[in-house]
Structure formats: structure tokens, C-alpha cells
Length: 113
Image 1 (cartoon, rainbow, N blue to C red):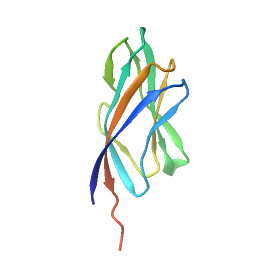
Image 2: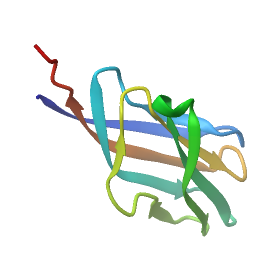
Image 3: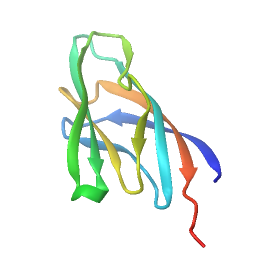
Image 4: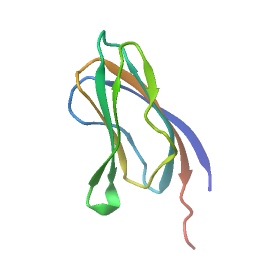
């Protein structure tokens, strides 16, 4: 198995749920951090969800915080494991006020012989 360290930077330009990372085919992803920064002058609510591709796209909320103005927070309080096709989505209360980065270790799945 090979390991690949990646990051995925994002700006939430809408109040809709936005995919910020998708685990590629034939890989397992270990999300270490979901760093979000509120660049707005007031507090902003942020929600994080995972979508399970192997369970008919079931959505699970993994974080919901109110982030004060001009502050940064890590939404991942522990390692989050995603399998092939699973996604990480974020949703902000207001558009154009939240930016950040997701740090991931992708592990290539072994092929059976």
C-alpha cells in the first residue's frame, strides 16, 4: 500500500452543503484536520457531514459549531475515515465568509490476487 498526503483548500461561496473532499476510487482516506476560518465580522455557524457511498449515500453530521469572528477551528476532533466514493461536505450559515483546508492521508487499497 502506498500513502499520499494531500490537502484540499476551500471557500464556501454558498449556504448550500458543499463537497470539499471526495475519497478517490480504490483508496481509503484518513482526514486529520478540517480547519475552518471565519473571515466575517460576526459569528457564523458551520456544519460538517460525511456521505457514505456504500450505504445509498447516507449522510451523517459530524460537527456543528458557532465560530466567532476572525477565528479558526479544527472540526475534526479525531481521525475521520472515508472509503472509496465517500465525501466530506461543509455548510455555512452565510456565504463567502468561511475558508479553510482539509488535510488527508490517502492510502491506496491493495488489489487481491
